[in-house]
Image 1: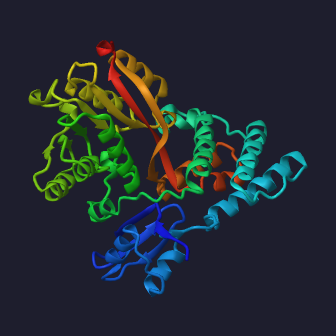
Image 2: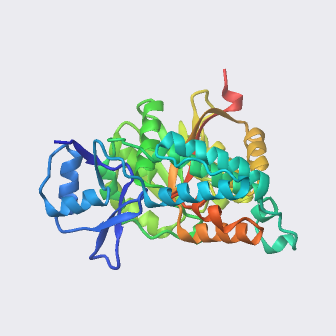
Length: 389
């Protein structure tokens, strides 16, 4: 009998009301309505128990919430992507590539299609008034870079991810979080990303280290105290609803303060922390003041660390990001590429597709190349430049 485990892309959220809970596989876009005992059943799978024969668990397996050895079925959008990439290459070159049936063949097809796309189908920069559109419209090659980068990242890291280490307790803790607020530029990462960030920080930091979380819509502070009691964790967060949620979940294990970082960090928190972690806004001014707050909070010591999440390719000004790091004396020790995953919601997807279509990209395969379920970001481990040995 095949062993089963929870998908690393499992999440839970409310449905049409707080009486309805939907369990989802974020990679496949599938979901199952929960029952009264669904949490207990999924927890049993996480603990290695066999629930074969249970009707609800059969539906959970059909929706890929629960995985087992020997599964090979890919998400539906991958089949559409493969078909349209072959058709596109044939249309532009006159030669149709063979059907891709393995991940390696898909990567080869994507590489070939990218070469053809960049030779024949690149969008033209927006030529109207600059104040009417965002910066990516004036440099649409950045959107093309993003499109192929993220499709490639999904194929490489997530298409056949059989990781069996999902911390299901975090999924339970997180599912009733407050709704995302775009006015605060919130973008929730998936539960396993929060888990992996917290695990990496626990591995890097000494017992007794003080950690400051600057903005915690990803709930890293909560994950840290769930994993260890050896760190002192503080959180600064602007969203009052999220502050209330974190305080309720903290059970006194960490401190949460409602605070606007545009006012800087409180004086009592300056030069106090062994580590700071943050996932700043992508606009120039937002990124800069988050970095300034991070530096101000860190102890001026060799072992002090900034754990920074961002994707430079989607920043308002990538070159300013690198110069800001240099100006502030923040030295990148290690880069974990495509470490974080966020839901690529349809609002952003439609905006990106509309922009590329307006600038001249073909409907196909552009639509399919924007079909990936996740936005990715890198995870940077940084030290203070002046503190290096």
